Amino acid sequence: MKRLFWQGLALGLVLVAAWPAAALRIAYFPPTQRAIHSEVVVIGKVVGIEKQPVDLAPAPGATDKVTHKVALIKVQENLTGADNLTHLKIAYVPPAAPPPEGGELVPERPIRPIRPPIRPGLQLPDLREGDEFLFFLVKHPGGSYYMMPGMYPPIPVKKDDEGAKKEIEMVRKVTAALAQPLAGLKSDKPEVRAQTAAILIMKYRSAPMFAQQVEQVPIDAELSRLILQALAEADWSQQPEGEPFPIQPAQAFYSLGLGPNDGWNPPKFVPPPPGQPPIDFNKVMHKAFVEWLRGPGKDYRIKKFVAKN
Image (cartoon, rainbow, N blue to C red; front, top):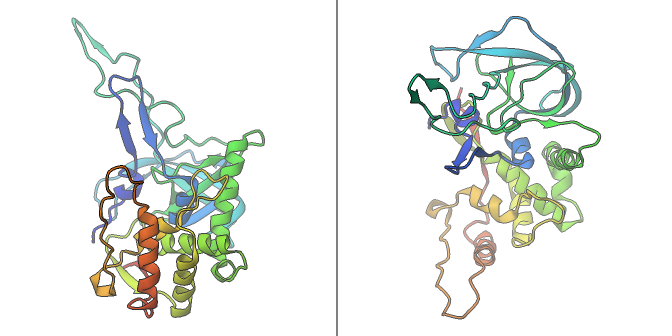
């Protein structure tokens, strides 16, 4: 299975053109998913920008290279992946300046831009000394640099930004669950067990970003059992209060990718008669999952994606 660098760095940008609207809209991954998919999550301060840029390949094995700026980051809080590191270097392509409004003009022939310019603030930032961010990073496969994937913008750390504060706390919950999974899975609170199980499944079922080839490896049998048990006991229809981007058990279930080889046969949905309420698909799938786990799935082990070589 080919996994090119652009999957995380460029393909991740979902551009929705509202022509003839004046700007593009970009949908980034929510902070919780950024934390799950990233190799390194830190709160850091930019303490310097290297004078000399570096040329790095845009994809593993690519011969052409792209010029990157390099920012030196002082790690203020390691949430995951930066154990024993005090500083790291982030290589990034600075955002392009927007074209002149209305496009460039050629004598006697006006030329309009093909698409509206991306609004400032909807791109990865051009890092400057003194900036503080919560960074979502991956290691560049060809060097000692870290990179900010295209759909994983950092969150600014500002005392007066209540929205950013809430997002950072959500990220802390995710990274804490990944750091101590057994504590969450054995919690006396069912909602904590359910959220931990969903976070772990989403992590295991995400392919490493720069991997060109991946394979699926079963996780520890007892850990798998606890995750599946917590998923079966969860309320698949409930959305945690106060979390705009919750990681829901139903979403985690679909990430498992169960099929006939696992003894899983999805239930058949019959459209309701006219005038009847719509079917609650998550409720039907939850019931089928619980029955499967008691039967064909009792010895099932969750598999995680790992990079080959």
